[in-house]
Image (cartoon, rainbow, N blue to C red; front, side):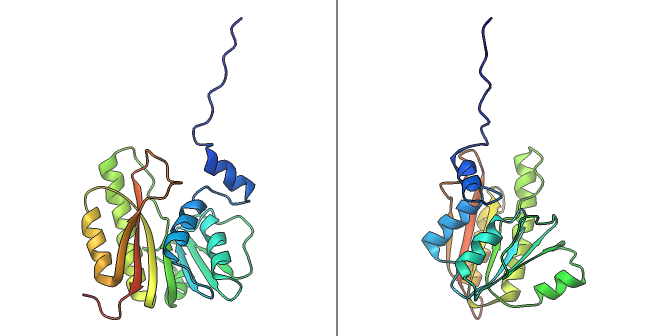
Length: 204
């Protein structure tokens, strides 16, 4: 009888295996690692706000990048279940309808705002891109209000209608703006990261 080999799981690629080895809950950590290596968005001692922080990989990386004197705050609709470092706080909440605890957290000021938020995908690229854009605009709104002058912004977005306009919005608020596709992003993915460096004191 002919034996059939099971197909390898295409999601279990190099980055997924590396994340498991490095004890991160998701491969997405390497996207932030690449961004940090290239743009230095998180400084030692920084206060960082992580939007869409579950399952916790970005929280862990940000905490290590900021060091013991840094402070990392995260918000997500889902609970973060991994063990976090002492300088990390993660809350369950909705950035569109924050409860009292999340609202108090968002009332603080930050050196860096990072967002890996993504909508529940439908398979319709137009719909998914529109929902992603909505999340990104909310993330930028928070960054504009809460970032200290000179602060940095990182936001994942699905490319589609409105993408160019969003990058223009970021340019108005930051001294420098970059679009970056990490090597660790899946080739078929429409995601790209919009980066704002140096929050302006006054927007153009």
